[in-house]
Length: 258
Picture 1 (cartoon, one colour):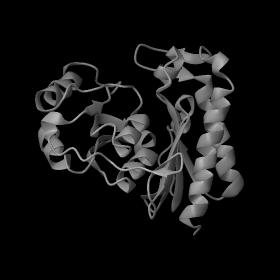
Picture 2 (picture 1 turned 90 degrees about the vertical axis):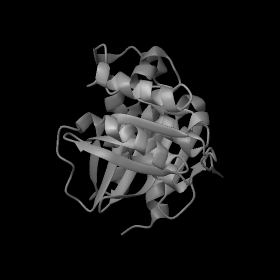
Picture 3 (picture 1 turned 90 degrees about the horizontal axis):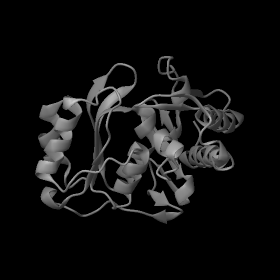
Picture 4 (picture 1 turned 120 degrees about the horizontal axis):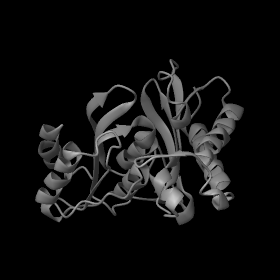
């Protein structure tokens, strides 16, 4: 087994290289494989995943990889699995919004042990190991100290498979118990903002494992709490990340709606 420091170095390098590839090709924002009302399949998604994969396999050729762009296969049966989201927030990226990122995590026997989230156009690199602090650009970060739900700022995501009444009841519930919720369009970026104390929590009723694998570790190492509320087929879960102080209140308010 490699050390967490060794694994973290490769996770960071893979996320950076993927992000740098996308940055070098910003002129290709419109270069898509398909575009729908709820999703964009971008050619740079595939290229960024290939870039990150090459970095990982050059260091650890025997490790398994699960990536968003190759997600049709079951979760690889391996003690060590790398999980890649090459562009989280693809619709934001397509429209020129800087709220997108490249996310790389590594799990050993089902537990996240290292992860990195690179937000290229904001020049921010978030990273953590299971035995170290959460960092942003090398500086330790901590979650907020907000302990009143009515003063909390929460973000959420609109699951593309559920954009009807079921999704909006979560929005209404958050608006009833906290400050007006934000939908910012990139789960991993949102969770990094929870880790940095800029948001107090993040909830999504149908998030994918590659969206949260790295960012959830970063939240936890920054002093926050992350929990799966419900599991679905196809690598999807209902998921809650908070500063910890608000976790029980958020969970009790949102869980009955699932």
